[in-house]
Image 1 (cartoon, rainbow, N blue to C red):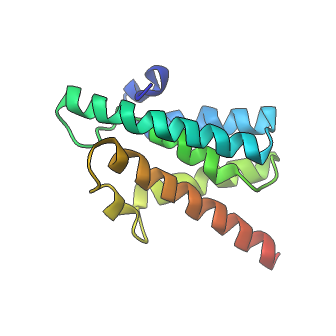
Image 2: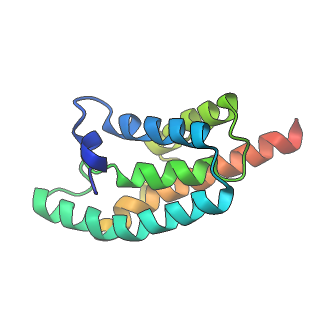
Length: 140
């Protein structure tokens, strides 16, 4: 679970590798917002547990192999927006930028203990992405 069915073992950019199929599925299946948020909540709760166990097993804090956080964050990033290809690709790109750059308090959330720290930063990156999308729609 923590390694996203093995996607976390990608040799380069495992977070991006895990986020991309989530974005593709959101575009293709076009689930309702409630389904995205319920999925993110369920994955988030299970992800806290799974990420904490994987951190302990690997003896590292937030290792790159753990990508369950990207799955939850990407679902949140897409919530509340059209499931058109431009919107989903935009959400994917902005989410990855927030996740990698970790601005506006995202980095500090990584300091929370165990799996909570692993999950919280990507959840906030997903929230920031969704808010950015709402602001963009408001001003267009």
